[in-house]
Length: 219
Length: 219
Image (cartoon, rainbow over all chains, first blue to last red; front, side, top):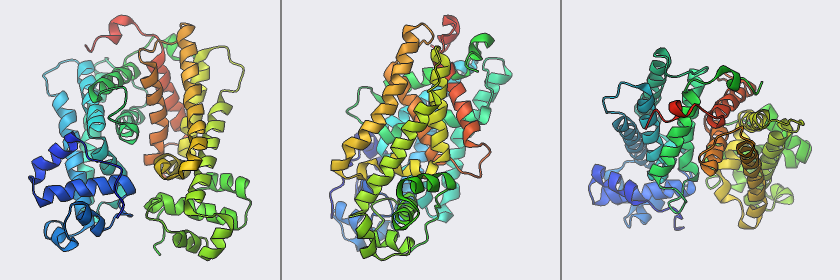
């Protein structure tokens, strides 16, 4: 067995522990997360995960009937927590669309930096989630996108935002958050909160109304 | 052997053919691209690739000594062509930083949509490129980032752009392009050029100077 280069960070461990306690199911979630992040779902065997968790494959089956089921649990935890973190930031009773969108974006981006290992598995192994489990995961994803889209639409309606291509702009906002999981390292120059704040500022610039002359200067 | 769900598109095929001709080396590049995109580098065996190319593993070794070497070839082709496409767009003798940055972003984003399969392998399998081949790939990546950063810096110096966090803003611009490879489908609602044009517009909004009152309305 190869030693995974990826190690679950404290934020991911805490989240998995909240879901699975501190016994074997938790150790298997951590082991699965590290193996999937390191070599991908398809290259990971049930034995790899069990060995990493210092258990036998048979003991793993008691808790998770397949590696696909384990991936589904990780993906659901990740997507549900990303949604929670995004909505939580915007839960304040703000009347103005600007601080609301700003907080949503900051929450989403910060989650992807803080949970970059879990985010990577949740985002990049989506195609490997068992087919019968996929609708639940897609619902969670759509909830994030719908929230951002509704907020952007509301801002346009109220005259606070100016968004020529709503669908693609929401895609772009999601991309900024999701791609953090690909490159973020804990040893980097920015904390998750610092990075997310910068990104939320950038997104607000994308949607705030502009001087029409300046906005068309590139054509 | 499983049939890959991913099939190389015409743009990728043309690029690989330019590099490798139309014989066995080309067929192996296509097979490697499809296998890596479908199941990841670690889950792909030399036999998978050879079988997909309707060859024996021994015949593959004549052309590529390892699957790592084949990944390096794909990654180099992808990164080199992304750099070419990015620079090509901005090759015009433009004096103004705005159209120059706009074209760079459009070229980079469009490449990632048009070559989304090759882009996915080049971007997401970077950790699997053989260690001795990695510096060459990283040089190509840095060239793209440096070009964007130099253009952004020049715009700030000339008073055309207003960028609070240069490093993170360039990161964000790169993310918008790279993440296209994760979600783009040929069957989607936008052509590569349409999508890239929308993204270039969004990026320009991020960097153009703003009314200071509007820009701080969220804090």
